[in-house]
Image 1 (spheres, helix red, strand yellow):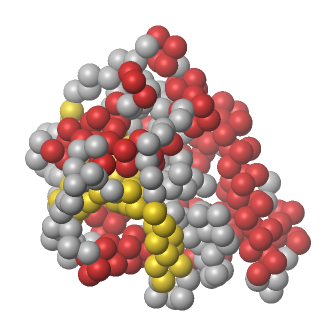
Image 2 (cartoon, one colour):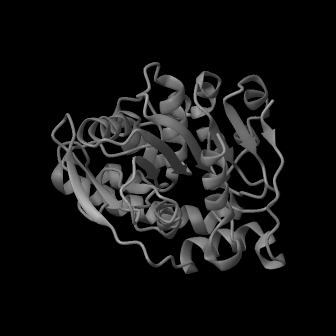
Length: 319
């Protein structure tokens, strides 16, 4: 019955979900992480860029970190996890999803909340090209959903993968989409939509036969984007079909390695379904922690080391 009690209680200001979300996404700076980029080719001839950082000593342990919607390997929540790993005898590789590393990807498809085949390709590359005997997975928001779905749907996990920690994860995508499109989240949804529409314009230039001006003008909300592009590019009927098939909630019962989900109760991006208490009670490998505070990927703590980073290290080292 792994519903975990939390010890997280930030300073008064950071008990406001929007303040913690915005501060952490806009103002937080993490320094001291030196990354080295590696480009790997995917089975469809597209590419993904991996940004590596290393512990001071040679190690057999690796942390694989996945970002959220329209993030990248240089987001400070990514650097915070990498830094925590590097300081504790683990190498880290921060994965940039397709099209998120500063260069348009080659294929019509890109990334989405349930696209686990690219993660599988990254894991295969790591396990065949390097000699790490212990791999941990760490995902935020969309990247956390990818990890949870991957763990739940993959029957033959590589033996090197020992545990996972996911943070601020919309495990039920339709509910989270509805939350994001509500008035309380207008600022966030507008920013996401602006970034996604600009990428869609780039896609149109590469694939004019697949995206026309009418398609572009139809994208007025995040759901419109998923109807016009995400579903079309990745084989779903429409946005709702994409949300249904890609939500990790239905896969949690099949997770077979120790996995922690940390979702703050004041995360304005999450619907009630994103607090999967029943799934945690019924799967001894799936742990759920629901701090009262933290917003969305905003677990501010002292000395610029976030609570989510401390819990990640604590969880994987105490197995």
